[in-house]
Image 1 (cartoon, rainbow, N blue to C red):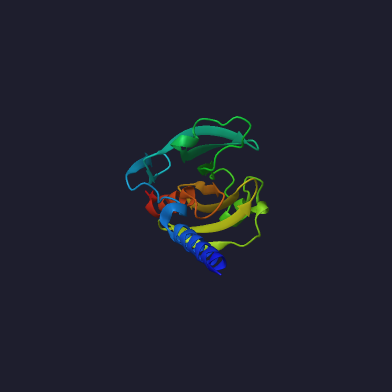
Image 2: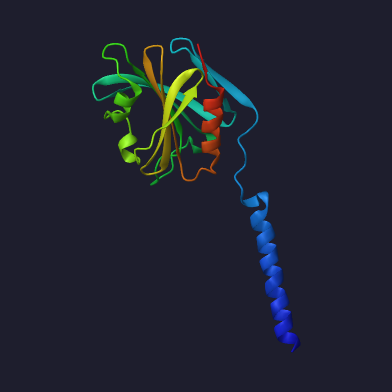
Length: 183
């Protein structure tokens, strides 16, 4: 009789230990670092913060016959390419000139420059700084979210790719949008 009771007690103890471990911070993603760096660009008229431990790179990219500026932010540990693996999750800020043939946010979102066609078509209105913005989610290799707004004759699209909204990179995306200042 003692054998089955001991077995039940052991199973219950293992289940309780597992539940405690699962509920602990051991399985939760670490919050983004609290020490911040600031990016400022006078030409584009904006600045934002992002945590130490993330790298920022900039480039001019030509897509669909139009050059635009791309700012990419990734975790420092993801900077070294992995063999036979997809690229890391990242935050990108795409800045498109919008003065020669101006587009509304809705027109840009429906264009081939946007990745909105990979989403469900739901647009959420909001603001970035004082600028009206639209936000949408999409799915590809990773899950993604883009917030787009107009500023200084430019279309600015801030996007994040992630596996889960619990990922650090998604929290950094929120921090970046909240810290974004328009001039």
